[in-house]
Amino acid sequence: MPRPGRQGKVMRQIRTLTGEGLGVLFTSHDPNQALRYADRVALLGEGRILSVGPTKDILTRDALATLYKAGVDVLTAPDGRVAFLPD
Image (tube, rainbow, N blue to C red; front, top):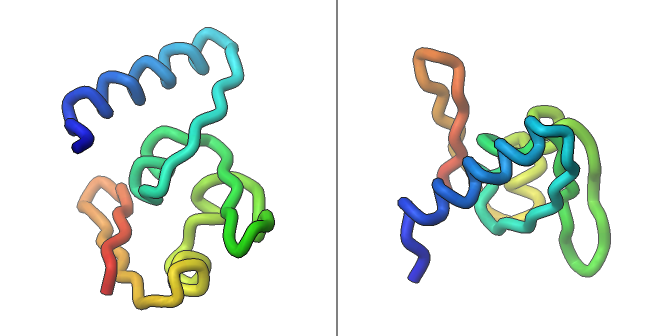
């Protein structure tokens, strides 16, 4: 079972590396993790690349609902951060 504290530590380390100019590729099934830590994403589904681009342009309610074939709710915090939840 994943441990959130360790996940956060790894993701912060990835941000540190990218801040030093290194390119880092990571995979995740969690769109919220990608929203927080990725500058660019590729949405993959049914064995192919569905879309590629800046994270905020690609990870949208409609794109995720189509990908997951399920409803997706969007939560927006007062500071503007967004999170996706299954509907």
